[in-house]
Image 1: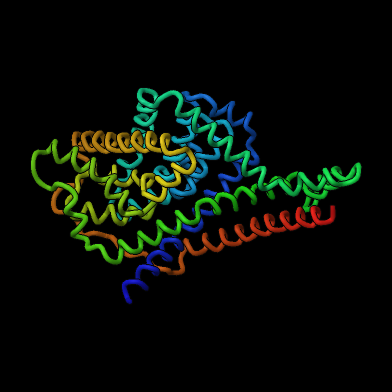
Image 2: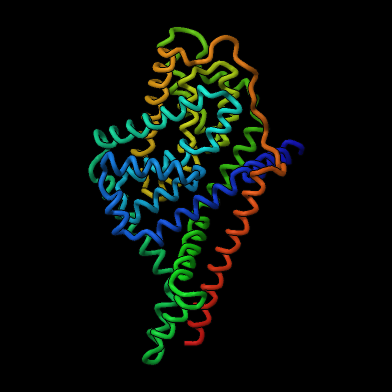
Amino acid sequence: MDWLWLTLYHALAMLWATFWALVLGFTISGVLQVFVSKEQMSRVFGRTSLKSVAIATGLGAASSSCSYAAVAAARSAIQQGAALVPALAFMFASTNLVIELGAVLWVLMGWPFVLAEIIGAFLLIMFMWLLIRLFLPKNVETEIRTRMAKQEAQLHCHSNHSSVEAPAKSQPGGGHEHAHHSSGAGGGQKNGRWTRVAHAFVADWSMLWKEILGGFLIAGFLATLVPHDWWEALFLKNGAVVVRLIENALVGPIIAVISFVCSVGNIPLASLLWAHGISFGGVISFIYADLLVIPILVIYAKYYGVRAAAWITGIFYVAMVLAGIIVDLVFTALGLIPQGSRPPSAIEHAHIIWNYTSWLDLIALIFAVWLLILHFRSRGERNRAHACH
């Protein structure tokens, strides 16, 4: 049974390494839903333009989310009125242009990969924008917004059911008393907003916890049982340069999809692939595909519907492949691709150790507990008010 315990340990260790980013990302999602009005979101990101995409990319790079949380934040932005392209640009940037990913990439693989990853991320966003403009059916974005409106209506109906009924059954003036109790108990409008952030935080976790847990468990399983040589068999290491370049860039994202490793967690596996012969562009396209792992594809379908999710997935894949190919060609022309014998893989299984990540996890845990307290306290107040009325 050693393999089972080792699988569970790896899954827990990966969760340990990314917990703070999950909390941060889902908090950003809740803040977008509560503190940013639909009018503000529509004004800044409601139209697809160079300015809106550039701002979304910058905010995404500053947000530092893991893949799952970035997807939730992008969905919230669309729900609040953002156009599809700026929201997706934010999602890409928040997983591929963040400091911690660059730091891990530099340590494990070197500065050329960091530079390539940054340049390629901008190319990827540009290709994604172009492909959506050229090929995405016009009614897909409308379908997405219609679906989100229904989901939002169902969520509000469920969460506000008791608070709507109570004033209706109370005496005249009771509705004002209840409203004051709900928004004022805890410190006024500002605290009321953070209570709503807590509700959104819990709602996002409730919707996605199965996919997140499944992704970590399968990643742990693969890290434990799949031989390293198996990954090597998936890509060409010899043959015509052009054929190898294209094939490796095509296969890179596919390896990411079946590896179930997201965000910064895919850098060690990228190091393994590079050590065993994958092309420079193949590594880059692999790194970008943390947004195409199977649990996230399931989330796309849940958020956007199967048809829209299929279109978005296909566009993402093509954009990732094109970015990997272009980066490889440019860096080859500039002589920036490391030559000679490749260093041994720096891949290491995740371990639960006390380091800076642990401090971030501790801070995130305290903050998450505070949000949970706000959520359950508010829900308890609503239930008591409903029982009283």
